[in-house]
Each structure stands twice: as C-alpha cells, then as structure tokens.
Length: 360
Length: 260
Image (cartoon, rainbow over all chains, first blue to last red; front, side, top):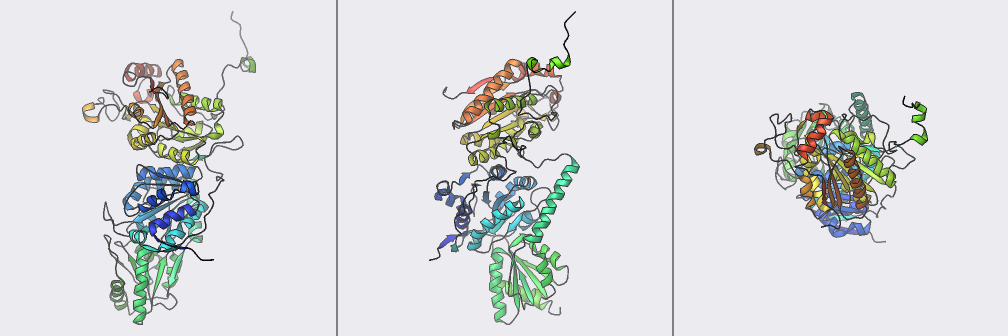
C-alpha cells in the first residue's frame, strides 16, 4: 500500500493531527504566527468529520477557560496561540494544573518581550518550564523540530495530559509553524465516548458529585494536595524524558538545542565533522521533564557544551544544573526573530568552547 | 391553655409541611444570616429536583461568596477563575449539548472582571442559564465597590460614597445583555420577600426550560442584600435594598421569548 504523505505547514499539521487524535474541541483566538491552526480547522469542518467542536473565542483568556470547562467535562481539548496570547493564558493554565485537568496547549513562540516581533524565537522556555502562572506546577512540554513532529506530538501530548491529569504544552516557534515539509499522518482515532470517572457530566444517583476545583482553604489540605501533585511530577520526571542524541558516541564537544535551533545545530555538527572535529548534538524533546541524566553522563565524556537557543539564554541554566559544573557550558543565542546560521554556530563553538577549553 | 404537641408529633410524616430539597447537601452554609445566596441556592436545588435533572446538570461556580456553591448543591460543579464562568459553561454546553449548564456569579465576577466573557457568551447565544446575584458590593473580600454599587453608597474603597464623576455610574449590565440577539430570556428578580422568592423560582424554572429549547442564553439577575457588607441588620438591609436599589434595578422581565 502506498504511504500517504502530505506537504503542509507546521500549523496545518497541528490542526490535522488534532482532528486525527480524536480531539473533542479546539478553542482559540487569532494571533500571528499560528492563526493557520484555527483557519485550517474551520475550513476542514471537523464537526462533520468526527464531531469535534471548533470555536473562536473572544480572547485567549476565554479560550483557556473554555479548555478548563471542556477538560472538566472529561473532553480532549486543545488550544494554540503565540507568546503574548500564551502570557494571557497563564492564569488559566495555573488553574488547570491546580485542578488537575488535562489539555493540550500549543505555543508558537515569537520574539518578545511585549508585543515583540512575529519572527521565530525560543524565549518562552522559562515561562513554559518554570511556571509562568502562579503556584508550584509544571507543564509537560514537548518541543518538535519538524512538521512531522508537529503532527506526531499532538496525540502524544493528549496521551501524556490524560495519563497524568495535567496540561501538556507543545513548545514550538514561528519557523517550524510556517515552513512546509512532508508529513505522514496517523490513522484517525475515534473520539472517546466514555468520560473519565472524575469528569463533571451530571451527577447520577449512584455516585458522589464530581467537583473540579483548585481551591483548598485549609492549609493542611492544600499542602497535601501539593504533595500529591509533586509526587505525580516526580513520576513524570522518572518516566517521560525524551531526547535525541546525534553523533554522541565519540563526541568531544556537544551542542544542546531544541526545535529550530537543533535543526541548525545538526548542520553545524556536519560542518565540524567535515573538519575532523568530533561534535555531537543532544536535542531535548521533552523540555520538562528535562533530559538531565543523559546530559550529566555526557559531561563525563565531552570537554564542553554549547547550549544554543533563540533567546538570551534560558535552557542553558538547566544544562548547567545537569552537568553539575563538571565541564564548561556556554550559551549562544540570537533574539528578535533571528535564526542563527550553521556556520555562525560552528564558529562560536570553535572560539568559545574548543579554543578556550581545549586544555580540559 | 393552648394545646401542646410533642417533638415526635412535629416531625411525623403527616405533619411535614416543608423539607429541604434532596439536591441540597447537609453542609452548613457559610453565608451570613440575611444573605440572599442561601435562598437562591435552595431555589436552584428545588427547580432541579422538580424537573428531575440532577443527573443532567452541570453548574459553574464563581469567585466570590458563592465560590463554595459546590459544598451546598449536590451537583457536578466546576469552580471557575474569577469572571470566567461563562467561558467554562460555553465549552461544557458545546461539548455536552444535551446537558443543562448554569453559571452562578456575583456582580464583581460577572460585571467587572468577567464582563467580556459575560457579553460574548450571551452574544453567541450559548444555551445556558446565567444566574447573577447583584448586591452592589464585593462581599467575600469585605465590602469593596462593585460595578453595580449605586451612587452615593459607601464601601471600603469609596468610603465617602460612590462618586459617579470619578468611578462611573452603576453598570446596568442586565439591560445591556437584553439588547443582544443571542439572549432568549432576561429577567430581574429578588428574594427578600416570600412573593419575590416565588417569582424568582418561576423565573429560574423557565430559564432551565428555555435553555433546552436552543433559543439562546437565559439570564436572571437577582437583586440581593449583603447586610454584612452594607453594615446593616438583615431587616434594614432588605428595606434599604427595596428603597434604594429597586429604582435603579427594577424587578421584572426585560426580555421574554415570543414577546419582542
């Protein structure tokens, strides 16, 4: 049988993948560079294909709270936005984490701060992996680096969100969202007809009422709730770390990068290898949980690491924490919507890591 | 000498003249004596019981005094962030279209921080019931100025009375909502007398019925007293409400299906 490939934008792949994942609802608000997600969904009429509901909300604030309502009813719900819109959603994300509600949120990151630029950036790493909203919570975060992964990670994100009853985020950027690549979609999943036992669907006589809330005024109850949630997070850290290691076996130097930066680094690795320099790339696929263990192990093997991000240096903090000071770790980044070139990254690696730390 | 009856006789089945709805839990309400919330909760419970829709109903609780609505109503309930109840309700109703969905919100929640969600939910004509308790004050945080605080009324954040030249006039959001084609039934009621309680119950029953006819949003404002926040006794607060709030928020229907 011929395998069916389509040529698609990253944003469209997200939308098609949502339908195929058996999502029950999408709620969103237009913002560049991710508006094609809702445009594709509206055009595609998923209510006819699978019964999926698609609604344009009056704001990102309303959109994330529609996710809260839908998730509270036990449904598979998704939204997408870009950095300023995701900032507006932080209240709702914190509430969903607090109420232990599953959902998928896509952040097609653009350069900030403020209104910033519509060009691609990776400057929302802190916001995504360290909080963003208030309180002690975490977001399961997947970072695709191709249009194929934009598609694959939607279903994966839904599965993780429901497995742990926690919001999951796909953290991508304007480059992957806007570029076209071939993509192979999974089979259409049926929408679930059964609600999880905790969902608010109307209280039948034979069970207690279901309450979705993040409010626990009694400090002891609230602390116990937090302990339970933190225990769940430790499970996620133990079981769900994903990464890709490229040319790692014999590497003397290592790039660490995700998403668009990882694609550029892969080219830089090739440039270095042509020159006989043994360089590898560790690409975190889950940004939280972060691939701490593998980085710590690699720190025993390589002489230095260059963390590359389209930001002023955010993920580099987690890389440094992972290697525990065993080797030098430097950051290199471009901002404002600029994507670095492979040659540029190779030069930086050579100057700041290889030359400066060749004694190591 | 008047005839006396024993406690056993009082609680005997044949002498039973009133019993609380089974849709109310046995939790002791935290509401202040004289507050309208408890009465409106009871009315909602009775309507749901009489319509036999407990298993078909999902409620959305607000932030404010009624944040603990889920402790008192034996229903599946979601607790919303401040002002966002209509967004939650929109998704619940769209994803479970056969169910009854209602929001329960105060004036700060519905008419200040959640104004956008309120207006757009009603404008889309979501087939839900919205119950709006208007007591002109932020009760839970201790009596601050609300969008519906009337002119001259003192609160902790306008201690010399609401000056409309500085803080705007009381927001008649129910009148605004009645102009939206998305709404089906818009009414203003009260619960300070037995007569008004009966009228409010009729209105809430109608609203639940209309919500399943897919004709749009049903919106019920209940003008209520907050004697604790107003620093009055319950009796004085109810009289003050009738004398001072009704001229601005007159009880009655603003929009009834089929009567445009």
